[in-house]
Image 1: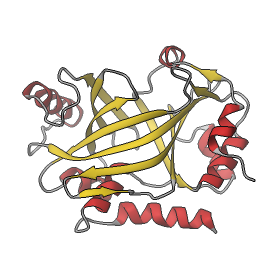
Image 2: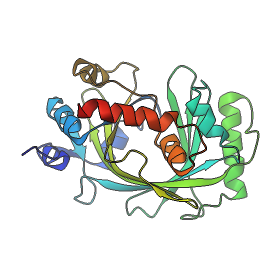
Image 3: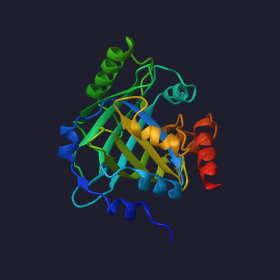
Length: 256
């Protein structure tokens, strides 16, 4: 019988949020994403060197993530990502597990492949409607990054729930997140945009970090992928399906 992801992680040393924060928040970083089967994910975790640790919070090694995403009425942010526009961004609110705080976040692409994530704590938590203060902060953030303000107002588009396991390598500073059970919901219904696949993301200060090179040696290839775009195309069939098709092709490849 094959080991599970959680069984593999149980064999790892743990770390905590204070240690991760002390190591740096990696708000400016490179994100490299993969969509894999559980079996390939287990093989990857087994290949990681002994320095890798698992984040443990309240004696749990996984955390439920709840996110709400925002876009304009024409899904302009969605289309910017699918078309590969160099200067693009995503807007979401996020709640981590049982943490009472909720954050408003903007993930900006730097134009050189990097990610600049900026966030602020919400004054009004657990609601999908953005306040005027939050909208002003979003507008100012985009202006500061790109020299222009958003062309149109953003509105709540969809929610995403999933379970995340986070790993940290104190030697390299790299982080690796493992997302499973991804469920999307909107007024139009619910969907599983990546099915039984596992979404892996390497977060690092350098573009081609040791972890990405390790995956490459194991013939594991990255994707231009977004959980938001895959969810949007699953919930709205009229939208461009490229984001979801990339995930489906990757998942099918690792099943063979």
